Image 1 (cartoon, rainbow, N blue to C red):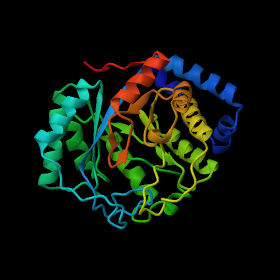
Image 2: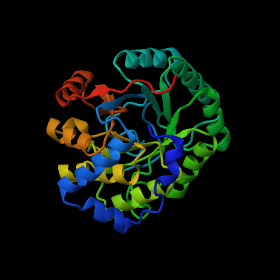
Image 3: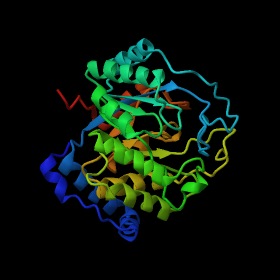
Length: 326
């Protein structure tokens, strides 16, 4: 990871046109530039393994067009109430045994509730932190008080994806605004917790929309410590079920552009890997991705299992990252 004294040298004033010019660079040159930035701030042979667990599934009041957990669509996801703390900690122990150093917990809320359920999540955060794992949560929008309670409980990072550009956002979801997303990110930052925020390719957005999203992400000072790049997983029953697939090289270019714009961030190669060849995944690592989500599921969509991931990393001569903190 980069040191704090390197942070001021990172740019926070990228323009959409500059980012688009990087994105459109001939692929060999783009990969070379991304690799050069990557090696300056990261170990090129290390990949952080993360595990994501859905601690409360379905019945979400939001209408995100990509999400099978929305109560607005019939996508075959059974609603499940908030898990018990001990079950979550069992899953975290298993994830650690399988090499994950970050454990992420997702709950399908619009706003994190301020009640016994939130207290239970705080217990989960404390418990996972005590296992010496990085702890990430994605619980919807937070108040400042909730952000501070999570930080006090030991939360490492809060995931709150921007998804796309401000201009395209209402084509994805209308039950919340882009500004509300940014407000929660600021509350998390003010509480002293790191940010995990990125987006999704393949929702019908333009390349310019993707660059605009990167512009917004990179304008944060400091940059988000974690930037997940997701590929849409089309789920029958959702409005985005029949969108055409993204050209594989678009994923590579997006990862590389994110790496160049935010050199010190961990670029997380997230949803959508199931449909990708090993060669494409290898190109994404070469483009600067240095984290994957491992395990059979990402919330409710399929994900390659640990064995597939282990085989791919072995072929590339890459090894799982060990925990950075003491």
